[in-house]
Image 1 (cartoon, rainbow, N blue to C red):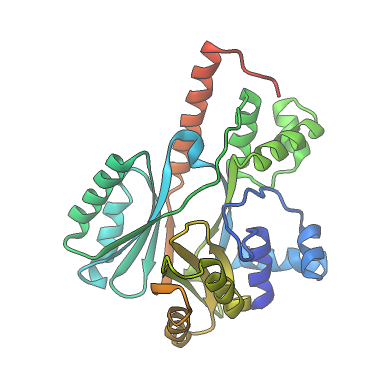
Image 2 (cartoon, one colour; image 1 turned 90 degrees about the vertical axis):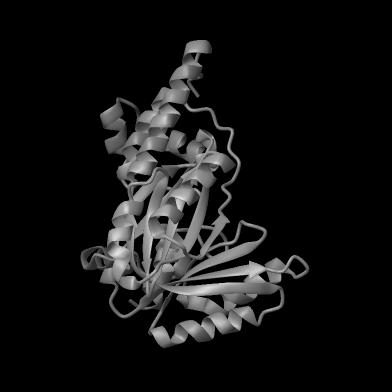
Length: 318
């Protein structure tokens, strides 16, 4: 993998110094190529090569968890030993709300979890602690943009198709649902612009050749200038940056790809030396286990909510 591969992925995720939660669901390869000032076939070939390698497994369109009364958090925990992680991962994958498990280098793991309120979050954390045993547990909330979008049944049908096939052509979606391509395009644009959707790239670091995936987490001093510190970090990482999640006022998370593991510690030390950064950590990601049943459950919950609403009030055909 080289810097152009990273820039292509970063552009698709719309994460250049912003957030991977921006709901840009369908980007044409021509628009990506135009922004990066490269040939469209180059973009197509690069993406196809990443797919064949196994690093880029595909994409998944997910519902904004705010629409189903949920929040998202990232959790880091240090386990007793690296040798026990495989059995631990299998047990953690069974917990409700766990969407992603990252196997980190050494005796560490990180998780992405969804929860409904502080009570359910505490229950999940207690279960994690009971499974992992005594360990240091760190977590951060990852806010999503507000959305008050009203879904129709047609919207749900389109979302059901998009969830697993984000790049399916408008004409194919329209043919499957008996709609016009124009209607499908308009409805998808409405869902995206209404912050109802976001795009997840399914990446597997195990199959990355010529690079190492890392996650840099920094906490900010309330007296410091968070925006300035994060701009400096984004600039310093340059073409190593895969995406940056900067929506939380207390921390920033940066996914990056480096050439070798020796570069990780200097990057962390540099970030910790920035004004306004109070603490942080950097982890080498060895494997990502995605549990997409959580996203399917969110869609099912949204469908139930729409059905209940339709029983008390007619749905708009917008």
